[in-house]
Image 1 (tube, rainbow, N blue to C red):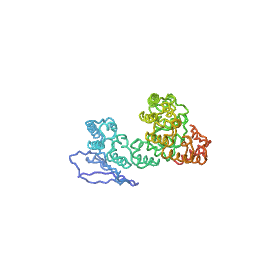
Image 2: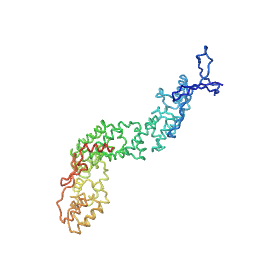
Image 3: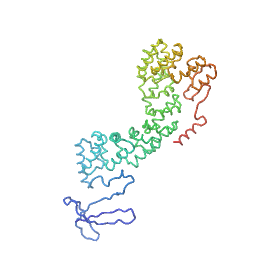
Image 4: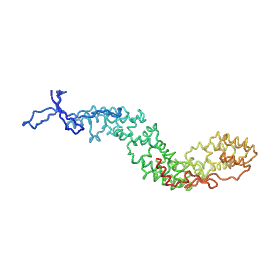
Amino acid sequence: MTSISILLRRTTTKPIKKIIFPIPNPNPTTQIPHFTQNHPSCPCPCPPQPYQIIHSFSTQSSKFPEYEMPSVTWGVIQGRKERLVSRVIICDYLKTLGIISDELEQLELPSTVDVMRERVEFLQKLGLTIDDINQYPLMLACSVRKNIIPVLGYLEKIGIPRSKLGEFVNNYPQVLHASVVVELAPVVKFLRGLDVEKQDIGYVLGKYPELLGFKLEGTMSTSVAYLVSIGVRPRDIGPMVTQYPYLLGMRVGTMIKPLVDYLVSLGLPKTILARMLEKRAYILGYDLEETVKPNVECLLSFGIRREALASVIAQFPQILGLPLKAKLSSQQYFFNLKLKIDPQGFAQVIEKMPQIVSLHQHVIMKPVEFLLARALPSEDVAKMVVKCPQIVASRVELMKNSYYFFKSEMGRPLKELVEFPEYFTYSLESRIKPRYQRLKSKGIRCSLNWLLNCSDQRFEERLQGDYIETESIGPTFCMGGKLELPGNEIVSDEEDESEDEVLFRRTVSL
């Protein structure tokens, strides 16, 4: 029988007591360090006594049992010499596996090879290879029970499938060092506060796992506040983050604001820009100097007017991020060769329908070939395309039905189609037929523009008037201003509020 001295720490102000428990030596063959102790009342050194140091850990159950930590995870407690020997043995073991252990030299490692083997095998079961571990060998410093299992359990709980956990860890291995309660849970709570749906949390973090390492009061908060300040509706922040979570990692001063300022300088109103960002948040990811500015200069070089740039961007925001020069060159050559449309006419087409740059040429040719087969001259077809580029994106089956109704029921000359090619963009069943029947019953004959280019309410007013009014242009939108309708009516949802009041209201609602 040997004796062991255990020091018990107490949280009270009472003095520490020393309690002696006689216990047998668990392994008589194992050498236990000896310490010589002199008692104040003893004039000579006492015989060496074996001592074993035992650290006490709290085993009180945590609030969340699934995250309860074990008491000891690093193996037996060693002296300095033993730690050095163990480190050499573990590093040799890792080298036999092909793992580079240089980055682990300054870190505390487990005391036995068995513990390290457990970590390596656990990571391999997740789907990580030795090459993946070599990309971030610091993950081997994480305890399986204390770090890895609680983190993976929480990630699965918030919606990341178990089959994707290995990929997630490979993309962002730093997550294994994080505290669930202190670091991970607050980020998830922040995302939910932005109206990111609970079922979308796993998708958002899967696309951008680095979010789990951001400070809440840093980039994430400032980027959201700035977007709201330019007119983005707070209720749309959640869908924007779901679509493009990278916006939360963008710095306002160096990435978001310069892009916004540049687009506004082109004549794009902030209100329209805010609506664009709400629907296509990925626009924020376009590089201003490398992509956006060169594409704007490219549009100008192909004949698009500077005053039309804002309209082009508002219609097709993706044009800012395309390899535009190659696409415009190819389409311009195609329009000139096949459709007999010169570069000036091509520029007009782009201004009216910028989506043309991404439209496949065989898709464009189908409506064109249909019109040419109706005995329309190629010059007239070219005029129709320049006036209404939308017809090249129309379905030929629908164009056939509309054309046959135009010839058989309406009995009008082809010249009217050349003058008003927009006829093919209206629904035959819901607009063309009902309105034509109403006109026929009243014995009224009018142009296609007067018949179709108005709302249902305006059409009824025209019929009640029993006269054919002078044709007027449709709504116009002056970039940099508000929507103006004929009659100088101003359309605005916030006429009575100043810009400061609107900004204050949006900030408070966030």
